[in-house]
Length: 215
Image 1 (tube, rainbow, N blue to C red):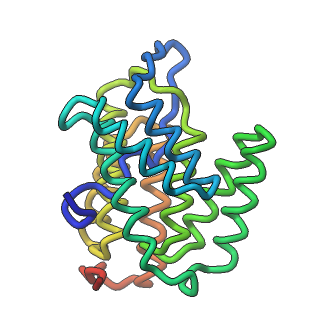
Image 2: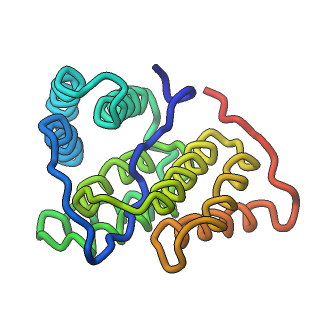
């Protein structure tokens, strides 16, 4: 399994919770996954990798938990070979400020800073991955979402994966579908619209094209 063939991040959107949504229990595998993310944020990647290994052993095969732990493990491992020179200074600052806010238990501020980090960072860069990973810590507890919101969130995530890979046309198509189907005022709708605006800015009216990232 590689980052080229699977979704880069399985949970980058923070879906809106319905007022009457019922909380789903957090599995032991998911707890290990989140503990690994926290270890990574604290700078202990060895502990993070060990926790994600335990997560994969406990999670059901092909489950979201197993996929998330495998993807994060691969992502962080690949990032070790990347140079910090490609990390945008403003993204690095947002990441560090987000970590500080999270440790103060100011989760809304941390979430906003990590979103700002992703927006400022170069797609596919190490700092971008760090912020995407950290955003897992501020997600709302798992809940039962309406099927239409679930589909819209999936379209957002698919688009984000294609964007990270450099296939902007596929990203645009996924985000366009998301905007058309997501409930009004939902987080998925706003995230997908923001993605479309970013692509529009990148190409200034030109048709998006596929420019896969070379490794």
